[in-house]
Length: 310
Image 1 (cartoon, helix red, strand yellow):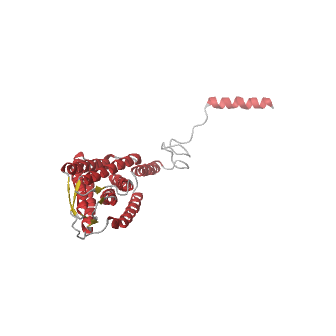
Image 2: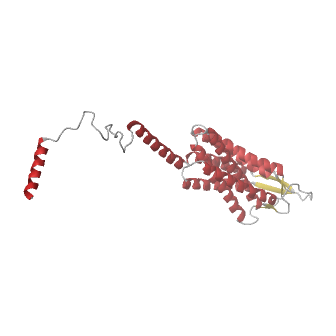
Image 3: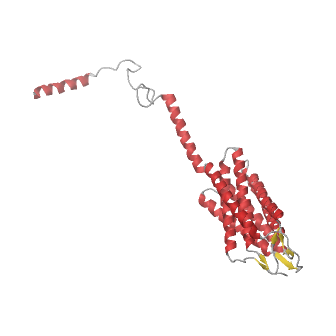
């Protein structure tokens, strides 16, 4: 049985793998939060597609191959079949998208999370093992049944929790915490599946077909940059829940001001006051009444005092 090395370059590859999973999950959760408050169905669908691209493409697929950079097999070259590797990418994006659309479109229901979570989880684990099927070595490999099943269980639980987060999480602090948990869960699923692997070396001396895993580094870096820029632009173009509420409050105040002017006229100037009475001119009942006798008497006494002072 051949010896497998999961951390050929030390801690650098799992750290970068977690960073990619966290980044993809964070951007995906932000996109789904914007989709959740979007009133336009086309905009909501567009944001959910971006979220699937972020979570499935960056959070899962990129994380997988960043971790695979640190994987090696003793006494055997390690190569990857390009078409199968590309297929694993589309499996990740499409299946995560299916789960997000089940949960994100229409009314929010618990059953949607309970249905979409297992579908997405099984598909994510299937993506992992599809990526592993793309690996060519000088020998054969299989999996320990207990760890193989455990990896699927972790993927199902992680996907269900992730979809639940997309429904209930609000605020940047909560979103960051949720993305951290999702990153840990995805990495746990990956390394559980990796530790389930058993390799049987053959020493056939045959040429191992495929490309080296480092061949994927440049496309991965380019892909991550494109995803970050595209998602950042999309998220900035769509108002957040708080911004949307503030804009709605401003629109309500403007509408109230217009209604007040239309019903009561201007508050200042010569138009009617807010109580419906004219601001100037004679009252509807006619000219103002003359001063009362008591007021006239008081004014006469004041004039007499002024005359005596002279």
